[in-house]
Image 1 (cartoon, helix red, strand yellow):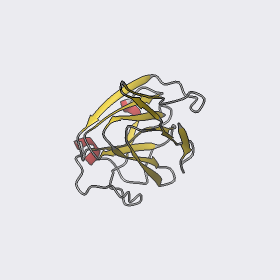
Image 2 (cartoon, rainbow, N blue to C red):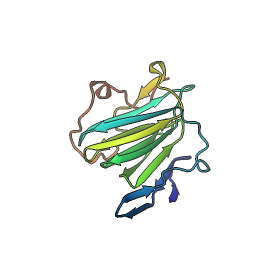
Image 3 (cartoon, rainbow, N blue to C red):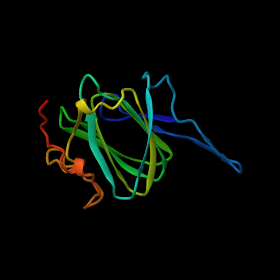
Image 4 (tube, helix red, strand yellow):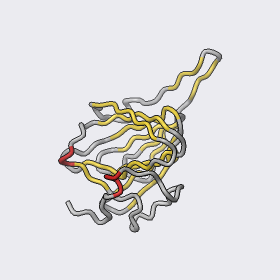
Length: 164
C-alpha cells in the first residue's frame, strides 16, 4: 500500500496493492495507524455513468470525516476547501481509496456505473447539511462531462461564498 498525502491538509490517497491468484484476490484497504478516526456508519452508493453527486458537507459541530472506496467502476472525485475556495480532484477506481477529514466538501462524478462504499465518523444530520453547486464559478472545477445527471436537490445548491 502506498499512502499519498494530497494538497489539502489531511486528505490522503491510498494506492492499494492487489494480491491475485487463480482463487481471486486480496487487498488491504486501510490501516488505523494512518487514520485515527472512529467511524460510526458504513454507506453504500450506486451511481450510473454521468451521475454527479455533491458537492456536500455537514457544518460544525456535525462535520463528517469520510473514507471512500470504489468497489466497481470509476469516479472523478472532488474535495473542496469551501472556506478558502480551493479544491483537488482525483480519479478513483477499485485500486484506490481516499480519506477526507472533517471540514471539506465532497462530490463525485461516476465515469462508469459505479458502486462505492464510504465510512463516516458522524451520522447524517439534515439540520447541519450544506452544499455547493457543482458548477460554481469561483471553483471552476473541470468536470469531465458537459451535462451531468443531478438530483433536484443538487441542482439548487448555492454558490460560493457560503453564508453560515
